[in-house]
Length: 158
Image (cartoon, rainbow, N blue to C red):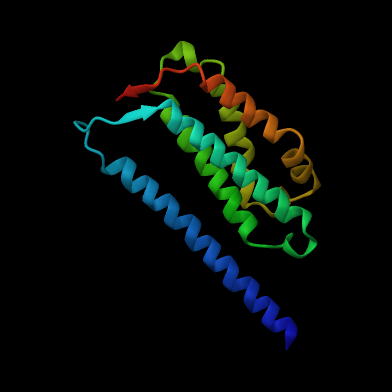
């Protein structure tokens, strides 16, 4: 009976995580596509840095979950990976409005991260290499991206 309760709990958690991830994507897409072409949007450097900060915090959370043996099968790993993937998509979209000379070196790095995180739906994505990357390479990469954003102008109007 305990095994059944554990499976039910995991299924419930997976459903909640999938619902949360999908809801966040729908909200983002609704806001993006709802904006009329005549509406002016202002994108700030601070907004881009906040996206990077959120990515770093989500990666930290994933790393902690992966280091806990009981949580390694948690559906919240998929939810966090989905958030990171969406954040990179959002960062990429917002950066495209800045001057090409400012973003020409940073866009390939963001695209590489988008490619990496797009595999979050595959079970094989959550392995030792991910844990190692979350500890060593991915935080360095987001720091490099943040450092390249810092010289951007304060804001840009679309």
